[in-house]
Image 1: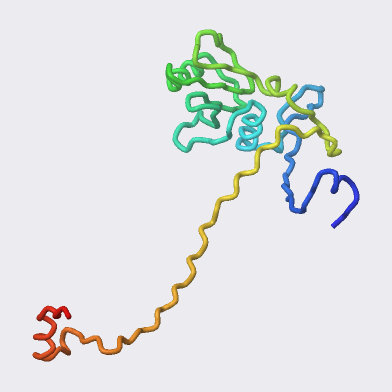
Image 2 (image 1 turned 30 degrees about the vertical axis):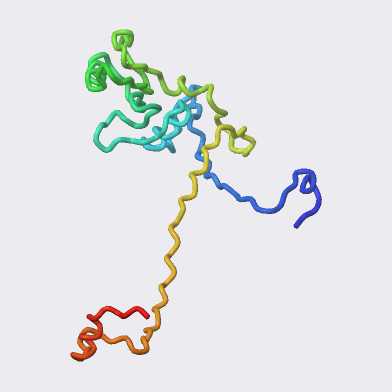
Length: 195
């Protein structure tokens, strides 16, 4: 209803909407020595979801495969953990991933020669995500970019209108099969004469 601003120049005819977002606490924070660490407010699920977002993966944890926290394509997956991974652990994961899939592992640390695994890419948290966002800010001055698209509204099938019952029609003199007399049957079987 406000005629001011750019209403007329933009040709606004009304309508619009709102999207609300709950902002998570800062993923990283500095410890007592000034080192970046994962915020203790984040549990494993929150951490996996946040890292998936930052690495451009769709967060979709598998209920069957423990190392699939998300995917970017049908054959490219991500695994997020705060554990320190060793060469034997990475070898086991590499075997499970197989030659036809790839896996990005974001972990607390690793002690291994990762060049031995062509299907794995290994990154350290927080170093892997440190440059992706602003950390330690709570003044709501964050630059928000790359917001997820709103899910398309699903069309709800309309309830079918209740059918009106047709009022019974009475045919004036339409005989039924069981109301015909012998004379009616004979006349019904005879062809009509042409005049």
